[in-house]
Image 1: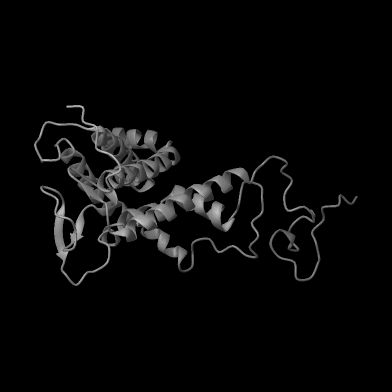
Image 2: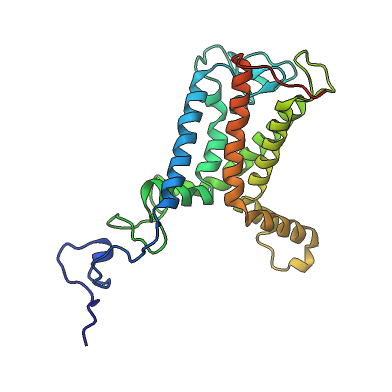
Length: 275
């Protein structure tokens, strides 16, 4: 007996309408607002892209003693603002005339672009691949990450090592926020709290990464023979369960830290000091 869902034989059909798929006219049968999640994801990522691009190319208002924007740290060019005790490493000489942020952002950006969660986020949000569960993607064929440029996603594990180094530098920057504008130690301002919250979220997002989980406990045949690594693997696994939350939280916090430095450096207001 015919059910109305027999395979289609339409010539030139592709995607969900190929001959091997059930002949269901609708692209999906979902009645909820399935498009809301990918739309919000795309809007959030687009907002960060626009903001970070503006700040990266502005090459201004990124240092207000003792705070340095996380977008510009470590500062690797000679045209950086001099930061007393800060991460000034003049690896690139006077020939570098562009914003110094462009020299360092490639590493945290590469780490996030190749992150398993962010891949899911922008694949769904921007490429509709697929836009949501049980909603067919509009593309005619699926090749996954087996071709250029998506095959480069496999270098995520290497970006992880660079991300750890960057997080270490940002930790140093956070320690420097316990100084005042004259570089005297033993002081704390509102910016210190913002930087503390940011570095905690940065480290939580970094160590909750799937690559970190594999480094800590991967390729072990017997957990009982490696109790320390097993315990670390368990801790990282608990953080990994909240990887999406940490990804968004750290993205917001790093933008907030940069914007706070921008407000101070541009003279919008003075940093409130607690002691």
